[in-house]
Length: 184
Image 1 (tube, rainbow, N blue to C red):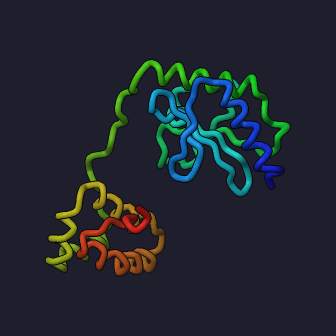
Image 2 (cartoon, helix red, strand yellow):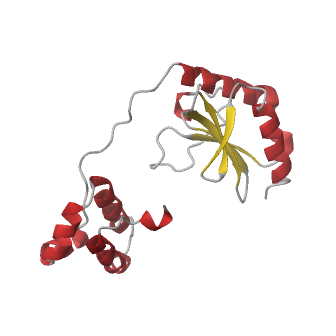
């Protein structure tokens, strides 16, 4: 369990204020930028306070403290987690931040490779083949939304869950709505 998350957040803010980053609020959290480019963010979670570097994969990470919070989903973001105020070492944190700023100064990094092919589950494929309207509406969706729906079905391990998810998404597909559009 985390001890004094507010105290840890305030200490991190104090450390970050020593750098040339500019504080903004995006997605309801503190995000620090360099010339408009997101460099890092901080927030408290249930079991830790995290500082994440948007291009953390480019950091040298000499202490081996950075973790990928969502393996397989995030490609370049890395987090440094703190459970207690005693774990904060301002000099080391500033060193990581300064390296992140230097990377941001070098300019945009090469664009990440995106998978072009959309893997469609057998269950979704069969539903599209057997329902002309559903297939037509699915084809009208952007590749991103198609991939979103396909992944939603594929992520379910049990066939029963896949079928339940298929029934849930059919009306959304026909309406041309993305799976997560309700959160926007």
